[in-house]
Image (cartoon, rainbow, N blue to C red; front, side):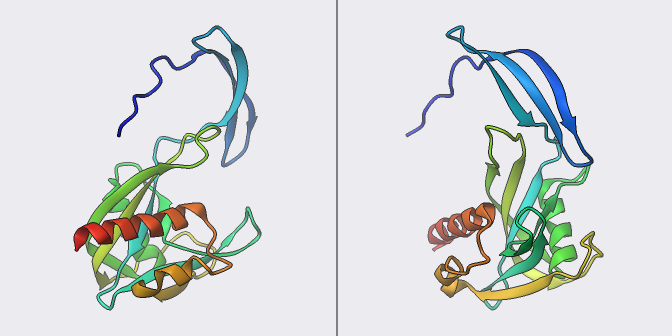
Length: 187
């Protein structure tokens, strides 16, 4: 069942940058809704590049994950390789580059599972979740400040991954569940 989008999004009456850093621009929006109600919202103004997250599956039916430092939680998190799409890249090209940078493999086969958003009430970023198969060894230098720890996880034990205390990043959890749906359709 499909639902129609709201027919009349609010009108942006004005916008103003209220904070800016190297990474983020915060914008205040004065909005008027279709019923005449006016409100001010704030949002993190994202770039138009987008990002990718890759769910790599080896020939041995193992998932490749990375454990990396996350400043937001000030700890190390286990998740799937990910990164920004560089100007001029397609999501698949970006996915293949990120795989080579983060886990030392490229892939001959990609499937786009879904494009997801992160906190759309406050942030206008999109991430393409891709499955990568038919992997081959190839490394590219990445931009991480320290080497990432690559973790192999048996695909048949995917549910135990959900029980790991450092596997909490919502996009990685969503990717894992989308993968299961994809694999059921493949059979």
